[in-house]
Amino acid sequence: MKRSLKRKRRWEQMQKEQKKHGRVKLVLAVITYCFALLFAGLTYYYGKDYYHKKKHCTAVTYGNNIYYQVNEDGSRNTPKKNRAIFHVPADGEHGSWDIFADGTYYAKKESVRVYFDPDETSVYYLEGELREMPVVIAFFAAAAVGMHSVGVLIIRNFLKTRKLPDPGM
Image 1 (cartoon, rainbow, N blue to C red):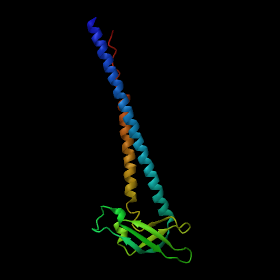
Image 2 (cartoon, one colour; image 1 turned 90 degrees about the vertical axis):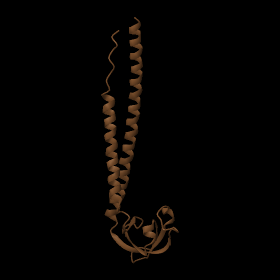
Image 3 (cartoon, rainbow, N blue to C red; image 1 turned 45 degrees about the horizontal axis):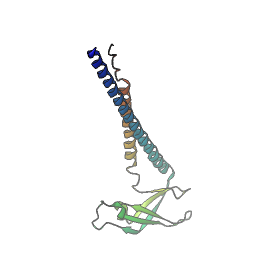
Image 4 (spheres, helix red, strand yellow; image 1 turned 135 degrees about the vertical axis):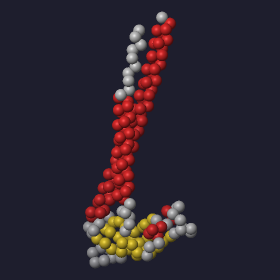
């Protein structure tokens, strides 16, 4: 009698622990899928912006550096201080406008090539601005796939968890 009572208590304790571990796995899976959705959303956002600019920004002009500010030591530690303003002069079809650019690369240039949408001049990008964008998009896509894979593994582990055998009382 005493032995079966001990076995029953032990079985109940193991059952509680298994439920606790199951909840932890479920929470981990939900968090993992939230990150996967975040990375998938970032992939979509940056990919859409990149391909839209590449497709529509077909006109090219040059902007002249009218103002720049560089860090005293010239380092990239505080990129917000490295700024430049480029003035794009008016041509026959479009008016003039100013473009603000951050970074040491732009602050030290005399002029920069500006690619813009001839139908909507507010959509533009500067020379070299989209150079790293495919790498960023690929990173976000790989992170989304990786997080999804980890979530699948957690869910599979959660579903394969053995049920405790009945203590046989």
